[in-house]
Every structure is written in structure tokens, then in C-alpha cells.
Image (tube, rainbow, N blue to C red; front, side, top):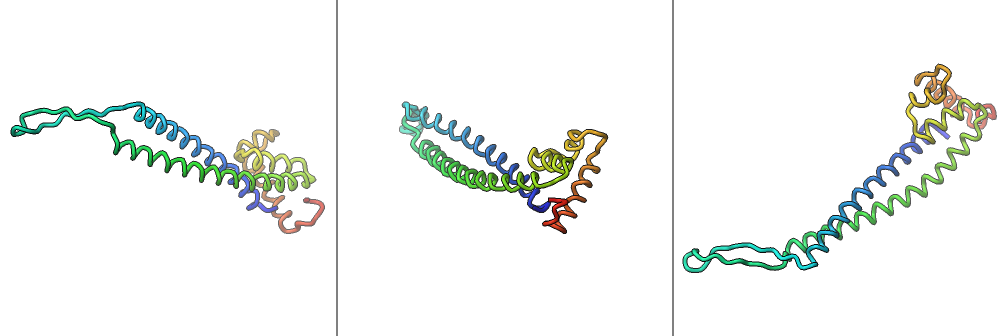
Length: 168
């Protein structure tokens, strides 16, 4: 396990949240479009007044179903539903990948013999905390630079000797 693997895992977690947010916003738009279509299908009538006849002096009221707007809204709704299905598929695939990566990261953390390092990695990469938040959670007068440096030193040793039992 390298720093890049851990960083990739953290980014995958953030990507899941971003995709879930996009799906939520898209579902809101779809609900509004479906509501608009239902209103139109319930007999919405559009009225307009036009001039014509006798030199443009007569006024006529024209009314009817807003067919062009209905087609436009319906097309937009179908497009949004296709996008939603694509995002859901992407999310499903990413969730499968992240489950596998979670297992790898947790196995790596469990293999670390130093409790302090395990806590730092867990707080930073599993719980997605900033280095400052990690330092606060660690307590004991730690600051973000000290916990980051401790992690960096550990990873340098672990990456240079991946089979050393001292580090893994």
C-alpha cells in the first residue's frame, strides 16, 4: 500500500459523495419536470389574443394545448432520466470499487504494528479528516505538521521495505 493508494481511496470516497449529490439534484429536476407534464396533461389550455381580419382591427382569442412546450418538456425529462440512469450506473460501479479498496486499506491498517500510525491512517483516510483534524483527534499536543510528518516517515520506510515485519 502506498500513499498514492491511500490518496486514491480518499478521492474515491469524495467522488461517491459528489455523484450522490448530483443524483439528488437531478432527481429534484426530474420531479419538477414530471409535475409540469402532469399539469399540462390535466388539460392546461394556453390562450392568446391576436389581431386580424378587417385590416387588423378585429381581436381573436386563440386557445389550445401547448404542444410545442409539452414536447420540449417531455424531451428534457427523458434526457434527464437517461443522465440519471448513467450516474446511477457510475455510482454502482464506484461503490463496488470502493468496497474492494476499503478492504485493502483496512487490511493494510490492521497490518501496521504501531497504534499511533494506525490511528493517523484511520483518521486521515478512512474518516477523511484533514491533517489538522487528525492532530486534534490524536491529542497530546500534536499539530498537523507533526502527524503528517510521522505518517510520511512511516510511509517512506514502508514503501522502501514492503515486506519488513516492523512496518507491516
